[in-house]
Length: 414
Image 1: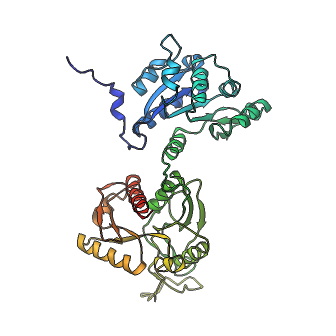
Image 2: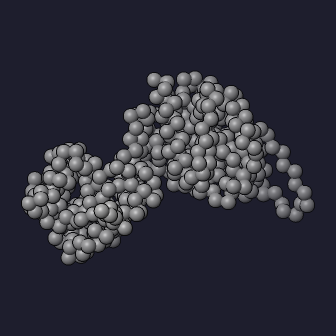
């Protein structure tokens, strides 16, 4: 007998990553115009590995045909409850990993807060609430409704029992957060780590900018992406992150304490200042300048045929970290360009000895990297001399590779 073929829409599962693999997510869609965005959210969750089942209210089916939800998820959509006890199958103890209400209306919020279960959505929520399934609500309504005393009372009652994603206040409306923002929230929720949770982590990221005169500078091509992604990964793991950030192009993650700097000396001062307090982990991911200079106070005239600039050696920040906190877990980064693998490993081990680091993350930022800087390949060298090499992957995957090795090393030291 021929095996039943899976629904074609399931072909997208894990196409973006495996962060939510094995996670069963119930997507409850309430009767808001924003319901059309739930289709995109369902697909994003699936692309990260989730198994998504949609529960739609009758009001939603007037806006979106149920078959659209089935097409999106590859699973039957629940629009009514029958003798099959769909609410129990979906949301009873241990049946789901998360109930996500997107969009969540004032009506749905009120029913959950007051134990009313007269629709498929409210009944699934009542069961899940009692079964201690985590619930996230992304609220959407007019601003006047959002500020209604009864709505605020319901939110207050539920605030320590479920999670809310803050709506965007636009055009007099509390609009549901965008699907990408909800996805990021869910990814962070499932990134918790028993090893990293509660750890205090200091991360440096981005380039530094060394002024030549009031207009011109010396800098490098770092965007800060890897350091920012590492900060986001550590926050999602439950760590408390302080980010010393040069003028990079990436937006720092929510939840990080961000200290903005420009020059290598400012970065050094910020690190020294922060290390007056106790940290568990320091990750030196910044592309800090190796050389600096005394800038000219006035703009240097462009009429000169030749210009000589005298550079001075900048401090190697990583070499000072263990002198300030000798028991901190120190992760350094080493970049070379177009060098043999052995030379990259040897130079990384030399840096490890000089800084007394616990891990060095090394990569070659030469020709292969420059062809597509979104991708990277790294080596991780630990203090015992073991070398692990990643495949060439998206930077988001690379930082998870780094995180995994930090966790393993920390766990081995416990």
